[in-house]
Structure formats: C-alpha cells, structure tokens
Image (cartoon, rainbow, N blue to C red; front, side, top):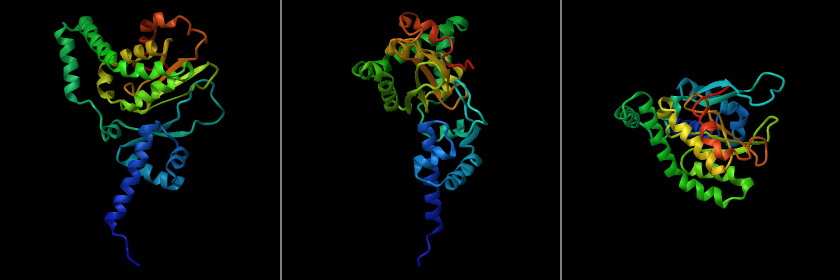
Length: 252
C-alpha cells in the first residue's frame, strides 16, 4: 500500500477548507448543517474545517440573526466571514480608494460640502453600474425582477440572492453575501446609500436596508415589498429620501 504524502494531505485539507470559506462567502452566514448539505461533507468534517478557519481568523461564530417573528428556542449558531476572511478573496478596494474618497471630500471644502461631494460621486458611480442592471431587470417579468437584479449583482461580484422575506410583511429580501467595496463603505456610507437608491429606482418601489456588511453584518440585506403591498404604490417618487435614511446602517 502506498502512503499518501503529508503534502498531498495538507493540500487536500486546504482545498476543502477553502471550499467551506467560499460557500460562506457565496451564501452568507451558514450553519454547520447548511455547509454539510451544500458541500456534500459530514457535519463532523465541516466542524473540523470551521475550527481551523476560526483559529486562522477567517470565520467567526455568531448567533443567527432572526427577522420578523421569533421562533421558540435558542437561535442556531452560524459562521460568518471576518474582515480578515474577506480580505483573502479578490476584492476591488484598497487604501488608494479610501484616499481618493477623502481627497474628494477635502477638495470640496470638507464638512457638509465634502459629504455632498462624496455622495455625488457615489451616485454617479452607481448610475454607471445601474445601466447593466437595468437591462436585466426590465427584461424580467415584474414578479421576477428581484431575482434578475440578484443575478446581475452576482455577475458583478456581489454573490447576491433573492428570496421571500420571513415574517408577516409581503415581500422579498435581496441578500448580497459579498461586497467588493466593504472597507471603503465603512468610512463612506454614501456608497451604500447610493446603491439603495438605485435598487429602488430599478425595481420601481421603496426598498429598505436591514443590514450591511460595511456596518459589520454578515450580509447586506434589502427588503423589497411585493407590488401592491402597503407602501409600495407611488413610493418610487420618494425613494431617494426614504431609502437612504437607513442605507449603510443597521436600523435594528
């Protein structure tokens, strides 16, 4: 019997560990059972890899966040990527982007004028991105537009999904499990606000940000009311002021 070299064993372990981390990136904070099912591994194997990832500060355990009515019992433990873990993936931000944003704010005079200049830049940036998203959204049936937007965002590196929102309110949750500009948005929430405004215009309804990666949440979560539900009709006319009120922040 030929023994497997330790190097090959180590490479196999690292490859599986990377798959676990990538699954969390693509799907957001996940339980052991979720990961085992998605990756075709035993829960014991998943726990072993998670222990190693926690030790390396790639993931961290946290209580599962519950929206809407809470069920009985303690929330399940989920594992989410840390800032260090996100840095291990290809992200399109660095100190240059932060320095550029600061320069824009200072060149405009600082204070409120500086914040307004950064907001104008964020809106212009998102307007350019939105043209690609608009084609996908307008080509979809009204009931499929959140899913179409999610797919367009995924193609842009945001690992997005759309699903029915839990709780009594009729609507969907758009979840972005990855944010290429999260570190920049931590300091400049205008980026999140501009993104939320674009979502509202594309979908033709008021949307509400429930959580953001930039704020420290595991996933950027946006609530989208279903067409015809309370607050949806005519909301597109006032989406900029309402949607931006919680964008980039956690209202909970």
